[in-house]
Image (cartoon, rainbow, N blue to C red; front, side):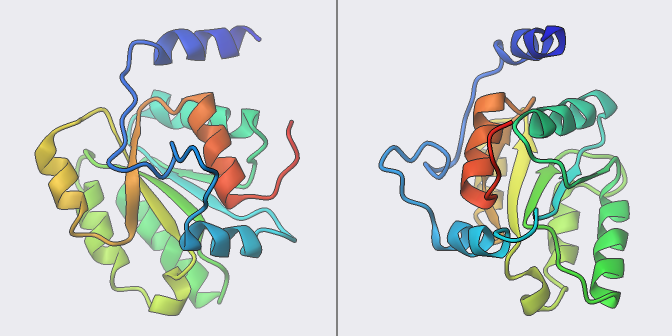
Length: 178
């Protein structure tokens, strides 16, 4: 309870933004990509990656996802480590994550470089993966650049709010409410 109040207090000052209306769709429609991910998650909880170099944001994001009932989460403080893990999944012929929350601005390898490398994976391996960029930036340059990556569905503001986490859960996972 106390942690939830702290997260709410932290997230209130940040303005929520999205490039499109995917998360704010008021008529209840779900994109085809979301429907594919929903079908895949029917019998097992799909994997979620959080790729965020800030330890506090990484931890808060994981906690918020867990609070809404998403528990199969792998967190990475560096983009290159997430890519290495994806390569291992490919070698073991395991499913890629259904959802990747990707920070844009990270040292060494940023989110853009991650996306460029992600494109090199076989289409069938990444077909059911949805990527959201995680940012505090509303810079038009970032939003324009994101349009060059069809793998990116939208922007999410940091820190991840419980409302947005619930929207993600409803779109990509068939999980009971906690």
